[in-house]
Image 1: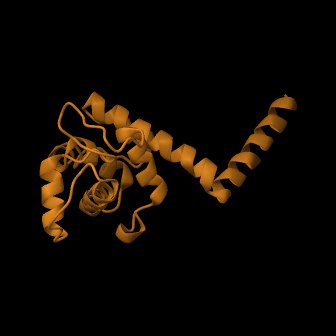
Image 2: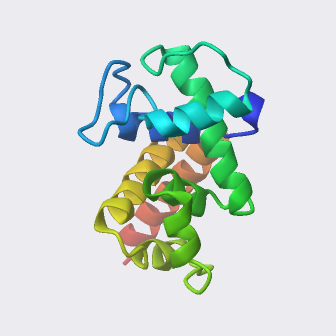
Image 3: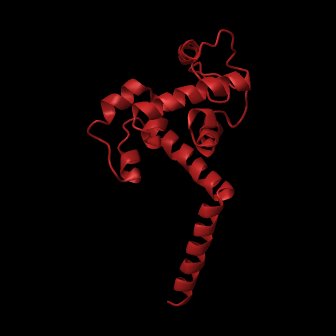
Length: 159
């Protein structure tokens, strides 16, 4: 993740949604491994990375190829992680068709405009996972949440 300038918690959130951290999982659509990389996407990424030998079932290879593709989706969408994650799931062609007119500054509104139910739910799940990882592993977020919760309970007890 760091090699590709990706937030490791976002990558972990995506892996959790894709495979539940099971390296041998294969989808009915043909996606393989931790990051559920499609064979054609893996071959494209391997070519771009000059990776001669790889197997999508090997966690190191799968993550190398999957994070390369996720970085590409970020680059294609000006580092907008919501668009990048939607594109990772639905394909860059679909997001390019959907979002020239649909991009909203409100993340919730944006997610609700995703026309594919599967992708809309996927984005919600990935970012739900991401939020949970932020709460667990980012001390600033945990502190802000604790302060907010304390303030909210104080406000409620004053009513």
